[in-house]
Image 1 (cartoon, protein in one colour):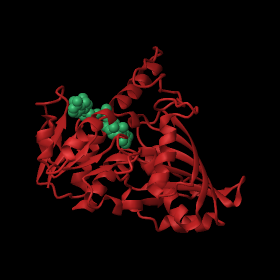
Image 2: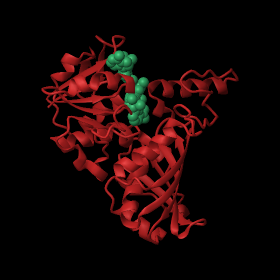
Image 3: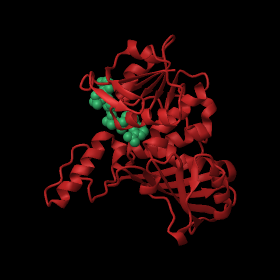
Image 4: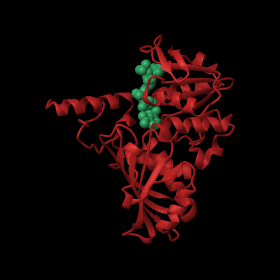
Length: 330
Ligand SMILES: NC(=O)c1ccc[n+]([C@@H]2O[C@H](COP(=O)([O-])OP(=O)(O)OC[C@H]3O[C@@H](n4cnc5c(N)ncnc54)[C@H](OP(=O)(O)O)[C@@H]3O)[C@@H](O)[C@H]2O)c1
């Protein structure tokens, strides 16, 4: 298949190239697109050296599938033109179309059938995708009534510039120099920032609201109540999330573990005695989302559960999930 990746020099674009190779996606032609800044440069990839092309609607329409890994504004402007009749199938990483009723929002393990026959498909917010790998199977079995989520989100969630800013900030901090911040609202190295995306009128950030909106859409569960606090932490890669749920039906840690153990894409990592629990360093570069610290909630008793998830958001939250969507379509 003729595959185009727009935003190929970015954090998500780079991972997408590797995932296509690792999963032996049937790529016959690979076209990498980025801005004018990168056009003409040749980059080493898992498919060999490829020269970056300047993005154009015409060139991307000639592809079979286009992975968009640029901003929401960019996707809003160009995705419809690329995917309209006679064009390419577009799988978009941005938030531009996630809340559009006409556009499916897909995590293949949960609602993959929604992608069939579509020419524009949205990939969820990375925090939501990782959460739902655990939440959706528990919802199917026990019925999730309410959920409270606190996130610990890695610097790479803010793209390639976020990773550079954390690495430079750590060096500056350790050298006793002032730590500069431009991508993040404050210096991230040796800090935590409870502010991702813009603040809304209700006091939540847009990142936090996305988790609620997207959970309801993907699980097709408009009645689920969910509240999130999203925090940027100085890890490089893989988002972690502490989750408390109240369920409609009784739930035990053993029953939850049994459900999660047979869920594709989930790795139960839950042996505290052996110091085994989900962590960014063990979840990074892994396809599966780690779930552990599973215990009965002291607040909700036998209809409540506390657990911790950690997943590589550049993979399950972006590159891997989009390639899995493409696999449904071929
Ligand atoms: N990072 C994550 O964990 C994650 C997870 C899920 C979804 N997403 C979403 O995925 C998208 C990409 O995120 P990212 O983290 O990969 O960002 P990034 O590292 O900042 O990369 C942005 C990419 O967009 C390209 N670009 C910018 N303007 C362009 C233009 N006018 N024409 C063509 N290409 C252009 C850049 O090319 P140049 O190098 O030429 O500037 C670069 O390749 C965003 O919508 C983000 O919200 C990110």
